[in-house]
Image (cartoon, rainbow, N blue to C red; front, side, top):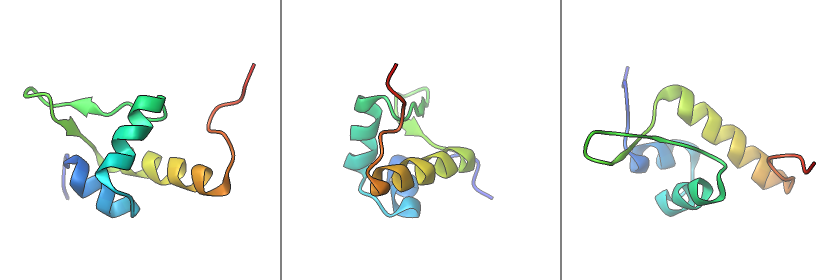
Length: 67
């Protein structure tokens, strides 16, 4: 079992490019933790959240409701 993974590893698991995950971060859809050297790190729980974001985006619905 992998404790943490890089953005490349996480992206492969959800079938997206690392740049897509970076873009989702810019949009505020995800908030990956950072290692002590500043690299994004993802847990298995984070990958599950990425899969949810990918599914919602694929369906064409916004991730958050508007007020």
